[in-house]
Image 1 (cartoon, rainbow, N blue to C red):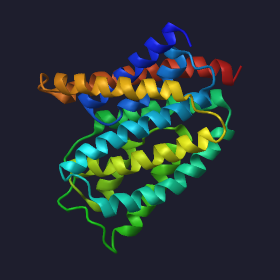
Image 2 (image 1 turned 120 degrees about the vertical axis):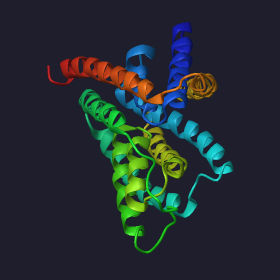
Image 3 (image 1 turned 60 degrees about the vertical axis):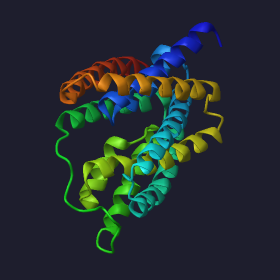
Image 4 (image 1 turned 90 degrees about the vertical axis):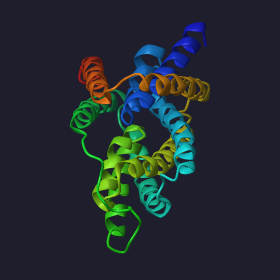
Length: 259
């Protein structure tokens, strides 16, 4: 570990925390490409496992803050997370067995989807409280399973999938969906990270750097957000950055995977 490793790892974590605080869900999608192409993690699977751990810890911190404000619908979130943990286990197991460069190539395609969804994100959810009922429980479980599969396979938090999934299945307000989604993000990230750690595919020191950097970055991002009147414009700019990074990943990983 040289000085550049420490500096780039801390900077990358801060950048993720800053972007999450500034524009909300979707910011952590850059964690894996930053680990691979900036920090210099040579194994894509190590980058994915390490990213999952860092995202889980940061999500747990956010969950505590939202819970204090009463934004978490616990029964709904726990069922969503329980179903999703099963999906995250099988998804992460499949991801470990997948060729690393091809996984990065698919990850880049996912980034494009995330960027597009961020641009289309509108509305504040429905008029329901989002509480778990006999009618919506099957929908909550099914969407949780699907989100967990994707989260585990790619080693991402999956908030961009979980939030609309919770709104679609329960019609809960956006603020509650964001708070409740962190139950799933934490659970999915830990499941994926532990699965990867069992195979020796987690860089613990780098994960720690990302967590500390993320906490510092989130403080700066929260302060900066107060000075911007339109997060919509920020989301558009961030989406453009995602598209550019995804294009670079498609080029680099495509050369390796399909040469």
